[in-house]
Structures are given as C-alpha cells and as structure tokens.
Amino acid sequence: MSAIYIADTGLFVAMGQPSNRRYQVVRTFARRNDMTFVLPERVYDELTVNAPDVETPPIDTAIDEGWARVAAPLEYTNALVSRTMDGVQRYIANADDRPADEIERADPALAGVAAQAFVDETADHAYIYTTDTLAGEGAENVFASEGYGDSVTYVNGFRFVEDLLE
Image (cartoon, rainbow, N blue to C red):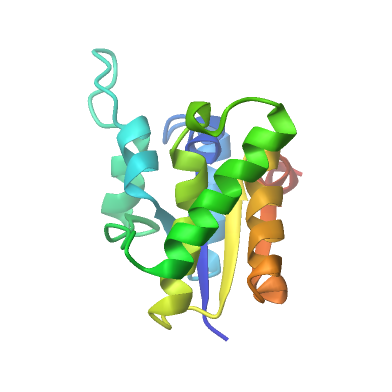
C-alpha cells in the first residue's frame, strides 16, 4: 500500500521553529518512518508569509531537510478533485452555519491533494494531518460518499504532536 501524508498550516504552526522540541519530534518521526508531509500550495503560501523576524520559515527548513514538500498544482478539471474540494467546503460551511464562500480555501485543498493522488495512482491511502477538525471530518465524509471510505484517515494535528511528546 502506498500512502500520502498531507499536512495543513496548523500542524506546522503547532510545531513552531526548528529549535522547538515539538518541531524536532515531528521531524524525527517523519524521518524514522520515511514519511514526507505534502502541503497544498495554499498551505505553503500561508506558512511563508513575510515576517521580518523570521529569516527562513520553518516549512522551508523542513523542505530543505527532505521531510516535507509542496504538492503539484491541483488539477481542478479532474472531477474527483473538484467534487471532493467542493464537498469539504460545503461540509465545513454547513457545520459552521456560514456561507461556503467564506470557508478558507486551504482546508478543501487538503482533500484535493488526496483526490489527485488517488486519480494519479500515486497513493491508495491518504492521511490528512490537520488541526481543523471540520476539515478532517469533512474529508473523511466526502471521500466515503465517493467510495473511498477506507482510503482516508483524519489525524488530529494537535493530538499527533502531543502524542509524540509523551
């Protein structure tokens, strides 16, 4: 079985700087398990906002070290990619009782990266590491409705980091 490990902004924010113990334990875990966290372009953009007090964003360090990378641009013309992204956006909007166009675009992109990996046959399982419960639950629900119920696992990013610290 081949898997893809998709990460959101919240996971990297929770880890902090490379000198932070949280960052170090996630890096060690990824290396020991031969994992590469894949980030949608939108997530990467959120993590590389220009901050005068940060010379190299922590995500760029992770990419340079080889345990994170940015996903290829999403192919929105692919039906599964667009359906899953729209479905996750609607799921979050309904759960939060707000208009779908107010939902942050990075959250549905997590599901989009998984869908693209399934379509391209580069993965048959996706682990979505997110600190946004609705994004994770939405991805699992939408993929179940698409016939991929056993192929997507939501991993709570906060719990993941805390478990590694124990």
